[in-house]
Image (tube, rainbow, N blue to C red; front, top):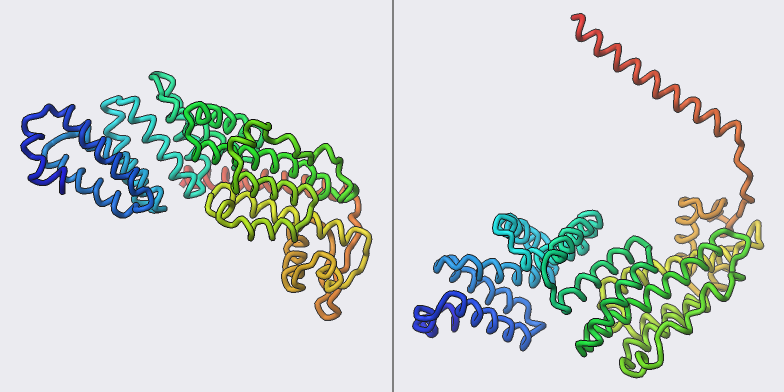
Length: 381
C-alpha cells in the first residue's frame, strides 16, 4: 500500500516511468531481503504491485514483478501456479525479445520442472536460458545460479563428474563475491557429487556379487574432497555433516549413516537435492550390505540377517522381497519357516533366447500383414 496507494502517488506522477520502476524494484528487493522467510507476505506485496502496474499500464515493471512472484511461488512449492504464471510471461517476453528477463524466467521455469521431477522439460528450459545468456552480459550472481542448476540436473542424471565441475564453477564465482551462504551450498553439492561418484562405483562392484565388500579402497577414497583453505574458510556444521556422511558411506556402515542423518537433520534434510540423493544412497548401502551378508548362504534365517545388519526383521524381510522382485538376486522367502532360500544364478540358455526372439519377430510380421489386409479390405469395400 505504501507504493501502490496515495502515499507515493505524487512522486510517481511526476517521475519518469524508468525511475518509478527502479524505485519499486529496489523497495521490493529490500522487503524480500529483510523478511526472507515470510513468503506469503512477499507474494502479497508482488500481487499488489502487479495490480497497480496493470491499472497504470506499466508493462515492463509488471513483467519484472511477475518473474519475482513466480520464483516466490516456486519457493512456496506452489509449482502449478508458478508454472502457469511463467508460461504466460514467456509468451510476452518472446515477443519483446527481452533477453535478460528471458534468462531469469527460463531459469525459474527449469527449477519448477525440477521440483515437479520433469527432468526433460527442466533441461529444455535451462538450455533456453543458456542460449539467451550467450547473447548478453550475465552478472556473476546469475551465472553462478545457472551453473548450479546445470550441476543439479547432471546430478539427477547420475553424471556426477560433470555435476561436480558445474558446482565448482558456481562455487568459485560465489567465493570471489564473498557470498558465504550460497558458496557453502555449492561446496556441499561438490562434496555430495564426490561421495556419490565414489560410492556408486564401489556399490556397483558390490552388487555384481563376487567382490562384495572387498571393493578397491581407491574407489571410495574421499580424503581429498576439499582443500585446506576451503575447509578453514567454510568450516562449520554443514561441512562437518557432509564429512560425516562421507566417512560413514566409505565404511559401508548403514547404522552410522542413518545416525549421521539424524544428528545433522537440519543440514542434510532441508535441502531437496541432498535429501533425495542421500535417500537413494541409503537404499544402495542397504542392498549392498544385504547382498554381502547372504552371499555365503544357500539358506539363512531372516532373523539372523536382521541381527547382523542391526535392523528390524519386518524391514529386512520387506527389502529382501523387493530385491527378489527387482532381480537383484535369485531366491524365495519361506515365511512359514522365516527363512531366505537363495538360488545360484544359472547361465542363460542361448537357444531359448534365440527362440523367443524369433517368435517376437514373427509376431511383428503377422501383425503388420493383418493391418495391411484390413486396409485392403476397406479400400475394396
